[in-house]
Image 1: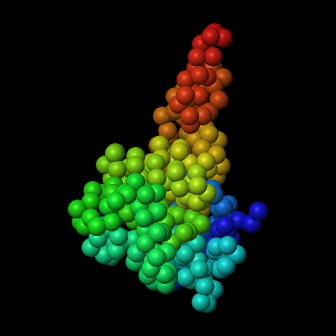
Image 2: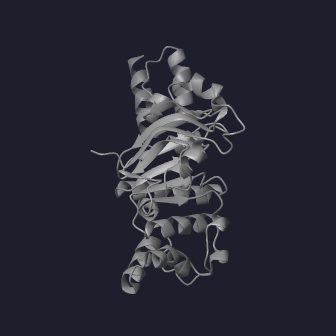
Image 3: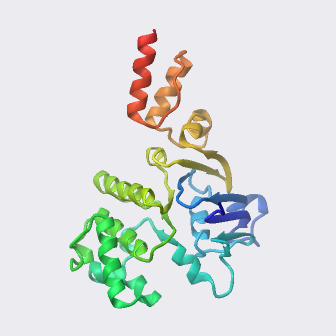
Length: 281
């Protein structure tokens, strides 16, 4: 299966003429996203994860190397609209992402730019609002929504354009716990329906929900794999100044005390393993 997104030997810096290559924002990054993947990208501040996110749909282009979306280079002349239709972006501050006074008009903005016929547009708007748990709210004023609702509206605007992937760059960091939980539920549901999700986050707990975790440090990818494997490297994760999910932390402590527990991000399975271990003891 051909990757949906390919990042090949990418170097990037905002000021390449002022800094040596050893201090560039991204340094020789190679990375691939398959169709339908759910990937979390974590790393300390300045690790390059948000820059990587912006390279995935052509908001930035590499200084060296290449990024391809569905085989199309993001810097290919005349192809940028195809890249951005395939890979949608949702950013950190929901208030910076809305362009229209009402919910319906806001979702319609991208569709109007794509020239989608009116009847199809109305159908897509309703479907997108339903998908993000905002049904029947098309006439609401955007400024009256909560932070979590605004962020879900941002996702709806991307979703209506039928992307293959959605990149969320710290999209839950400004939300309260309830808003964060609803956005994460929407992300999981969209992924279950086949849309690739790339979630840039500082939260280890949020990253643990993904099927794959990529860890960045100083412009490079230093760990990449299933969360059970990545967070098993708990000491390395802490050295980067990152948190370790609670279940991984508890498992690591118990394993150091001689309990042969597998690393899992599923609470029910973890409790079952603890019970089996106690029964054996």
